[in-house]
Length: 285
Image 1 (cartoon, rainbow, N blue to C red):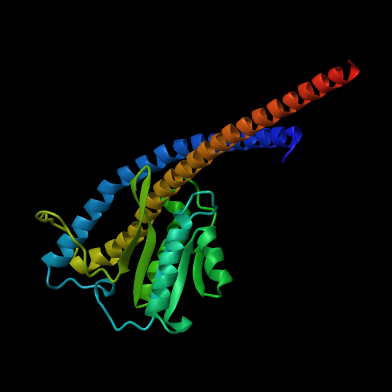
Image 2 (image 1 turned 180 degrees about the vertical axis):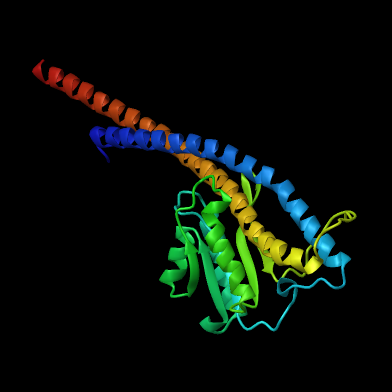
C-alpha cells in the first residue's frame, strides 16, 4: 500500500497537471471563437466566387479551361490538412487514418500518387512511412491569412495545370459544432462538379469568358484550399478545447479518488497509533 507521502505527492502533481490542462482549455476556447468566426466570414466569398465561376462556365459554350477538363488519371494528388501539434484528441489521427486507408485501397504503387501536407503531424506521419510528400508547409498560424498558404496553394494548382497530377483531392476535419468534427473528402481538381443552389445570376463580363476563367479558376481552386484550412483550424481548436476539458475532468476524478485513499490511509494510521498507545498503557498496568 502506498504511503501517505506518496499519495500526497500524487495529489499535488495531479493538481498541477489539471491547472495546466485548464489553462490550455481556456486558450483553445479563445482561439476557437476566432477561428469559427474566420471560417464563417469566409463562407460568403466562397459562395459568390463559386456562383460567378459556374455562371461563366455554364453560360457560354465557347468558354473552356484545362481546370474544367477531365483526363485519364495516371497520378493523384492528396492535400492533407492536419495540425502542427497534438493534444487535440482524435483530430489528427482520424484524418490520417482515413487518408492512409484510401491510398492503400486506390493505389498499388507509390508512383500513382503524391501528397501535399499542410501541418507538421501529417508531414511526419507520411515521411515516417516513406510515402512521397511532394509539397509541405508547417508552422501555419492559429488564425491563418491567405498569404500564409498562398505559395503551396498555387503550387498545388500548378501540379494539375502542368499535368504532374491528373486529379486532386483534399482531406480535412469539417467543423460541425464545438464537440463534433467529421473527416471530409473534397475533390479540388478538375472542377467538374461545382454545385449551386438556386438560380444563377446573369453577369456581363469583359473581355471574354476564356480570359476571365484563366484568372478566376486558379483563384477559385486556391480558395477551396484556404477555406478548408479555416474550417480545419476551427475544428482543431474545438477538438483541443474538448480534449483539455476531458483531461481536466479526469484529473479532478483522480484527485478525488486519491484524496479518499489518502484520508482512509491517514485514518488507518491514526487508528493504529491509538491501538498501540492503548495496548502500551494496558501493559503497564
